[in-house]
Image (cartoon, rainbow, N blue to C red; front, side, top):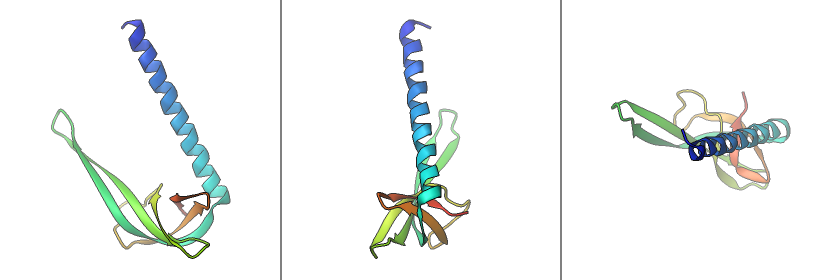
Length: 107
């Protein structure tokens, strides 16, 4: 491998590490300081990908609706969906008022 490849790999590793740390800190803040409310899964988006060997994988993104402290209905991405959940599944979630579009399920 040449120097350019090593630099590219190094930059990629740093970016992945930064994203991981950001996600961990955001989730910790939600768990510690989030407002807990009732929510319902309102939508599930499925992204299907076929690998070069023909295997198919699905990535699902879950969205919930909840009522915030101001009484507004908010649709937000669910950060830790329960396995096998379907549209209409009710649960408790936590959100931060400054970032209401991302929530965590209360376990």
